[in-house]
Length: 341
Image (cartoon, rainbow, N blue to C red):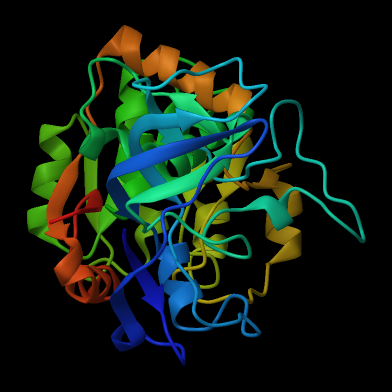
């Protein structure tokens, strides 16, 4: 079978298409034929060595994929051959709140695409708890975008208890942000979105965005947001920037509002203006995707509202490096997908 491996050293250009033996599922495991995979910013950080700098080569990257069950091992009860499934990012997180132990095996040790091997293989073996059923109305290219980007956006809005009539600030137009826009509109919320591209803002407007702000031409964008909310601020922020965006997110927040801290696109360290944060009685929560139960609940919502993920470009596996370079350049709107050619 074919697989994409990171070989010898870190870096996009160290990715190679190779042949590997086809695996066999053991007890409680299923063999999944991968039809489509999607790329996340996290995958780029794994490939370039920012995450897991002690990773052993060769390594199969990426975590998000969709396909069908090819074979099941003994003791499997949830799936049968032919079932369409989507991978679950944190394999051991089945339900309940996030639980991280100080030492030993924990949730993050079971994450696909680092530290656990990823899904850029024609076939992968996973525990049956490590996948969910694919919504019937979605094709595999769409479903492959769900495990991290969609579930992270869903978890942020859910933990922030977003209600109809409230206002959400969504930063940028990558995968998480576009899903947050779609979910928020389906929930009846007002959405303010930022981007450095007027063309992307126009595309976001077509998806329902109510207020569009170009943060390049308006670097103190929090002021525009306060003006757009009659000086009150937003109820909820989906913060994907981190270092250079968090303090502006606090400035844009109404008293008692919620910030879902999701990304680190602008850096990994931040000086928080603590008095400003306290004055707003703000809530800030780090979002580490979600449980399998939350994934399944999100899929029910998707099915009910017939929401379609935004796939900006599809690359064959032979052009995987081009897909990663596109991701790194930040030129995409929504999600980038890989399919086997």
